[in-house]
Length: 516
Image 1 (cartoon, rainbow, N blue to C red):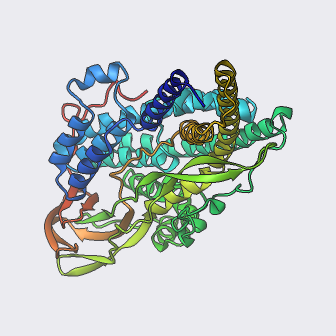
Image 2: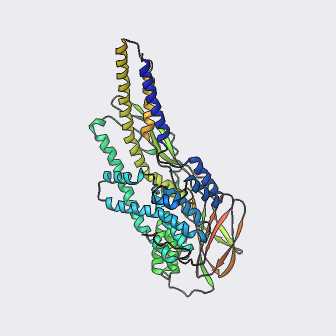
Image 3: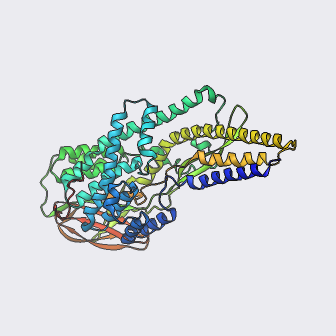
């Protein structure tokens, strides 16, 4: 039997392991989950100022400039803050854009790193980017979020009628999309290469698992990933709405050839959207003189909220030379979203205006997770080998210590605690080695984006937008030849509306020094 000194040492060891387990999973997700829920709930209810203030409190923002300089603020803060402020009216557009540009600068740094690293082997590429970004407290936006940043910045510029800036932001999409494609392909190749290298190592002979795809993980919810719309997407990152917005701005700029290219891009990404195809056909027809008393209007309406990403933990059987072991896998999962609010039309004056869903951000989020799942599984397999080796080393150490204690005490008793300690230590080791996945996300993005294209007489109008709590009637003003109306519908029937018809000069909307 173990003497009291040995039992005390094991108790200390297990206490240390327990503390590591309790703290290890909080290393990536910095903010309190409960506080994040409060912030998001305030936003979903349309309480934008409350949500903005709670966000500052949650991230402990007292001196933002100092925090930014010292790299102490997570990227998710700037994504959320930027979107909140954009919905609070023209006086906040400057601050909104400045916030989004902080996240955009991180992506520029990422793009520079990707461009320099593309000649590396897949394994080197994967490890390099992971060391620089993925294990940093700074959140690297998901692929669909990367392109939505361009779209949101372009919408902000358009709301300020700074169309020259909007085109710069929108035209960065092509290059950004290509780098996302190359990085994703090489990163997944790198993850698989690392696993193959581990499995071919003579020391790891006999290790493996029959669980090699996400659908084989016990009790994993596949409903979001198996959605037919997710399967129909070409990828997770191409934003058709951004291309259509670009085309509309080119039309405003009297540049039909570039407008045609943008409409064509939108139609190729989402061929099922008739609005895109129709605009592409129309822009290629001979130009006709426009009525100076009419405004060409693009109506953009955001609805719904994204389902959460969360850590899914499973116990997986893993083969070893000494027999099967149980290891822990931690992979991300996404909740099947129920927070959709689908619109078919709005009414302007007395005329119903049909709406077209041009973007399903929820399916983009699910597709992003589906595309990256092989990499997560590859990492889980590599982690399994670490877990098993650590379990075996620990078990041998427990056995050796037991033998030494029995030898010193001249006892031949069977050890009643050894197997218990082995089981507890194996579970603890698996929990620690399995690690955690990054569940941070841009929570305030809409689940769906709707658009309509129409002509209205210049002057004052009323738009009636249906909500779950009845119709909301808002005033809009048509002043210019081209107008953009942007609305966001919240869960409690609140509607935020941007009627972008006034040019904001440098004193109101300066982004000098922010764009590199």
